[in-house]
Image (cartoon, rainbow, N blue to C red):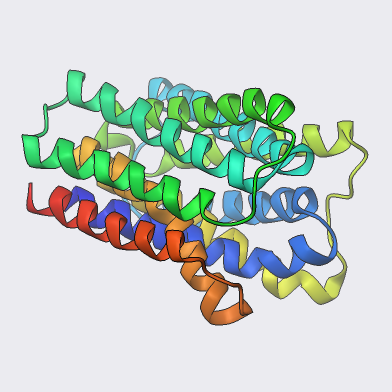
Length: 274
């Protein structure tokens, strides 16, 4: 079930990107991230109020630390794509964001069987094919360090979610999303980027923000059920985004990306069976 929730979280992340894509293409990724992050925080508050859970100081602190990681992850990811290429930044980010929580959960929670480890390796290899099979990378010297920081931010941010107490419910997600939006807003202000898009984009902003908030809530549920499996399957969102881009935006898909998608599916099946 942890793998299934991780996969569902990946799909909600890809759906969030689908709604945010128009804003990103026409205004820029930073304004899309800052406005959607704010809506994601509101979504997290609404879900926390409607579900069981108590505000526990320790878990709220862990959620805030997770938010710092996620905020750094998304801001450095956007900066890396700007100065380099998603073909470089995306695979490095996805691999580290997967490996860090997977290794941590495997050591501290439960060691996955051999089939699960093999499946996790296949997913990472498949993601490399999916992301690097697109446009060629550029400015590697400047983009690689930023990509590494982005992956570490997302990976460490996920690690802080693994040890949350079930009694706290979804309140740590409120803390996480609240802190992450502050990091994104600070980055936007430092680069003198707008925070709120024109009104005609508000439907896309709301859709992107709601699904972004739900993705954290669903991922938390998956981490509680099976942290190693959920930490891997949630990293499938780049593959889902490639499919979404092809179906809805007419993006070209290379042969390497098709191979990568098939490897990702095979790896995911191995994790689920394990």
